[in-house]
Length: 277
Image (tube, rainbow, N blue to C red; front, side, top):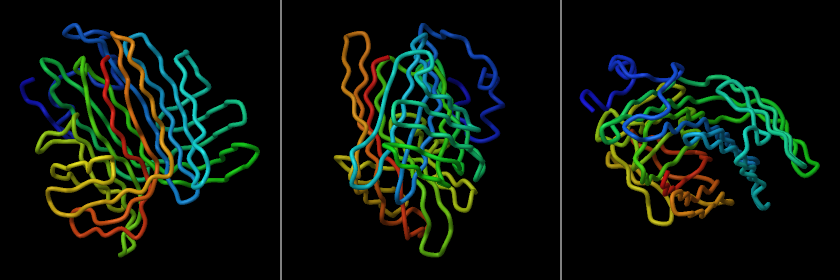
């Protein structure tokens, strides 16, 4: 579409319907796809939760990762699914699991609108601090974890394939960092969603390359992150008209982000996703 992609305040200057405004349910014969995702990451516990809708189909999920323990997770295709999530809070209730977190902004939001064929897709990423409690398997964690909220919506191509990483950590100099890295969506050479936040301030990054097997990420500007997996969410669903094949491991990161930002610690997720939707 003319004038796209646009990043930052310019995303609101192209005259398109964007959240929180209502978006048409169908555009160019493509159904509206939208989701909210939270990832929160630390050395003893990591979690994610999501609330998505593909056309009329609701999907809810959550997962809890701890080092040395099997992943606890659930995905449902019902209206509630035991997950209540927005950019302010997360509440999950399932057998043996209760998550109750308040989410506070921990940096500036990053917003992008990109073309998708003759239509468009939108995303906003926001660093947050997640405070509250997690109960799993009879154990309680009182948590204060850095993380990232991903709000996305748009008219994605029928066949969409992407790789993604979200993470948090600290540098050897003591700065707090968070990152959002991607190929396949919102990945133009500039005006992309690729971002590193340094003490809450977002900086756009150049193109990235995901190492085979989701073993890390290389940066065109120099630097590389190496990834070590704890455990992973995985799915392989193919029912003809709908396909959803993904792998999203939780784990730790080491290495250097562009700009000489060498990690003292790093936690987060990698993801590869192949969707027919």
